[in-house]
Structures are given as C-alpha cells and as structure tokens.
Image 1 (tube, helix red, strand yellow):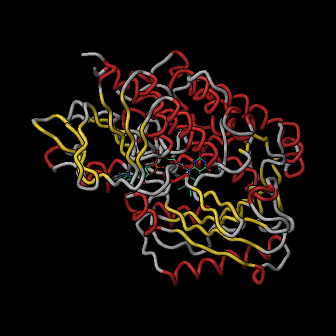
Image 2 (image 1 turned 120 degrees about the horizontal axis):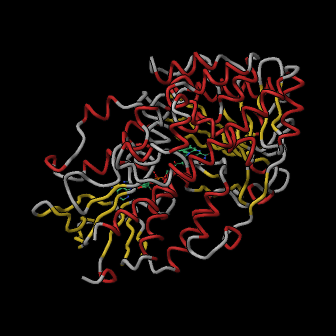
Length: 488
Ligand SMILES: Cc1cc2nc3c(=O)[nH]c(=O)nc-3n(C[C@H](O)[C@H](O)[C@H](O)COP(=O)(O)OP(=O)(O)OC[C@H]3O[C@@H](n4cnc5c(N)ncnc54)[C@H](O)[C@@H]3O)c2cc1C
C-alpha cells in the first residue's frame, strides 16, 4: 500500500506530538492531531492577561543544539520561527547566607566558584570536560535510539564508562567538591530529569555541560514561541490540527487500532499515536489491550508535581535575574518529602522566574511578570487553603532574601497545582514532568514507544523514551515517527 495514503491520528499537541506530527507529515503520512484543550502546546501553554504573558510550563531553554537539529531536519532554522537570546547571567541561586551567580561562560563561572572555594575552578574544569564527553556520547550515540533493546546502551564509549551508570551524580559531585553550596549548584541540573541526585546515574552529568557549557537561552516572547513555530511548521507540512477535541476512546478491532472517538465522532486511522500521558492513554483502551497494570504505575518513580503561581507586579523588582533559585533551606529534607515520604514540604525550596527582566514583551512597562514554582510530590491533596499557605511562605522568603517588600504590589495572581495538572492534561497523579530518569527507568526500561499488544498503536512524550523535558520530547517525536515508518 502507498505510504502517502496512510492516515495517522495523534492524540495531544505537546512538544512530543507536534514533533512527531512534523516528522510523519514529512515522511508522507496524512496526519491529523487532536487536542482536548482549546490551544495547542500541552504543558507548555501560555496565559496572556492584563498585558502580562506567562509561560505556564517550561521556562528554561537548554540544549539549543537539539532545537536547531529539529528545525534543520525540515530545512529550517530556529531563527525562522523565533529570536533566541543567551541570558547573561544565566541564573542566580539564593542561599541562606550568600548568592551564587552563574555567568554565561566558563570563565565567569570559574571565578564565582573560586570566590566560594579556593582551588575549586580546577576541579570544575575537569568535571565539565568529563560532562562534555558524556554529552557528546549521550546526544550522538544514545538518546536518538528508540529504547527497544539493552544493546542500544552498549557502545565502545559507554563500556569505557560503565562505572558512571552505577555511581550516582551525587557521589560524583561530592568526590570533587566539598562546599555545600557548590554541591547544590552542581546537583541542580539533574533535577530536570525528575529524580533525586542520589538516585540519578553519574553519566547524567551531561546536564552539567548543558548548563555551564551550552548556556541558558530565552526565546523572545517566551517559550510558547517554540510551540507556535512548531505549529506553523506542522501546518506548512500539511498537518490538520483540531483543538477542543478530547479523545474518549481508542477503537480496537481484532487487535488493530482502527481509529479514535472524539466528541462522539469516529475518526478512522491506519495508525494511532498518543502524546498524552501514557497512563491516561491506556485508560482509553479496553483493559485487555493495556500493557501496564495500576501496580506497575504505582511502583514507578514519577517526577514531581508543582505548585505554581503566576503573578503580575505593578512595579519593577530589585535584586532578581530572569531565573532565580531559592536554595536557602535543606535540599535533602525537601527531596525526601517529594520522593521518600510524600507530603507537603516543611521548608520548601522554590524557583522564581521573571522573564520581563530581560524581555520587555512579557509585561507592560514598569511592571514585572513572575512565575513561582514549588516542586511537590505527585498525588498530594490540593486545596485552595494549602496553596495560599505556601504562597505566603514563599513570598515572605522571597522578600527577605531579595530585601524588598512586594506583597502590596500584586495586581494579578493565579495558581496551578495537582488538580489542574490532572484536569487539564489527564496527568497521572498530577505529575508535572512525567516519569523520572533513574537507572531503572532509562531507555528500554521505560514504557515503550510501541504497544506490545496492538501492532499499530504508538506512544510518545515525557513518560516514554527518552524522558522528561522539552529537548527529550522533541527527540521522542522523531524516534516514534521512525518506528511508525518501519511498521508499514
Ligand atoms: C511547570 C513545568 C515546568 C517545566 N519546566 C521545564 C523547563 O524549564 N525546561 C524543560 O525542558 N522542560 C520543562 N518542563 C517539562 C516539559 O514541559 C515537558 O517535558 C514537555 O512539555 C512534555 O511534553 P509532552 O508532549 O510529553 O506532554 P504534554 O505537554 O503534556 O502534552 C500532552 C497533551 O495531550 C493532551 N491530552 C491529554 N489527554 C488527551 C485526550 N484524551 N485527548 C486529547 N488530548 C489529550 C494534553 O492536553 C496535552 O496537550 C516543565 C514542565 C512543567 C509542567
């Protein structure tokens, strides 16, 4: 049968679905994408209100090479769709008694490390050189593989580094650095992978190279510009996009997916791909076609959920950068309250994002746009009272650490938490960043891109291969499109 006539339906419109849609359309499939919400983008949607533009999900643009590769696969450049600026400084970390500023190049970062601990820049250079080698291996040899077999992880380079898969990033950092602030700074990047540093293989130090070596970038107008770029590209390639279209069922006949049910309408398909949360997608199937039991999901280490606040201030704030981490409490206590003994954190660490510091388009003149994020365990009780209690905690700490009063300058405030993640994205337990990348949840050990029970049903996104984050979601879309092409 001619591949050009094959019809693919895609559930969801997050980064992974949009990526897959572009690749599949380029390969000649007839692609239609169905999104339950009224706009595309999934966890990366945007809220525009009262002159403020809030990205409501990702805000750190790391690994620019992966975005460049994505657009290059279509003969395009990132700059065809959005303007990218390197942030300088990249970010700032507030500790109880000091502030560490991460500059936009290794020289500045080394200077800051020396200020904190004499002699540490020598260790840092070695650590980052090793991290860079890991990055090259990860990006060129491992991450673009579909997770079908353990052999994918076996290369000349990984054999030489096998110890790094069994040591943790926490051990690796502590071997080289003694100062607790430098340790926290170097353990921060792997938090994007969704697990504790002492449960993440040392090989993932490639995230440190992404951080210090490649830098932190900002698309002018916010992260949603990437989504808009990918949507334009998909449409240029002929993809049909339908929003306000929740998929209620994946229709299966005699072991084959024949289509989906959307708003009581049956849409026929030759292949079905879901970029919605994996657990939710399986609930769209009759139970005999599900691959994983509820017990399976319960046993998995999920990345955290988050309590988020989007805030508009009526003045410019002081002593802040575009990205700010508040590591002024005990990291291990908070981590344990996320992973080991899930409960609302006693003394939460938090992140504050002020994109209007570097991008005037994000807030009206003389006003500031803010996004506060507290990572929490997925599945926690979520009530308006708890949200307010934690807003007071972080606002008080923010005022103390930055030495200013802002509580009377709030002109807009909206929160987002576990219940919203469940309701808006059908997220399992309200997770924010999918399933963590621990050693036992890496590559072929993650839920697969292809159903083991239905030959023409596929999955993509942050719960499958390669894992959480925007760059992995772009890669996930590419990997699944290749499997689907082969399945013909
Ligand atoms: C608060 C937050 C901060 C983050 N920060 C960063 C960051 O700074 N940098 C970074 O790289 N990553 C970050 N991430 C992670 C990153 O955003 C995600 O990994 C990525 O966006 C996931 O994309 P996805 O395609 O897998 O899933 P999603 O974006 O969740 O897409 C799934 C889509 O499926 C839709 N859907 C669900 N059920 C149905 C149905 N039945 N019918 C139709 N549609 C359905 C959903 O509405 C959604 O649009 C962050 C995430 C969050 C939540």
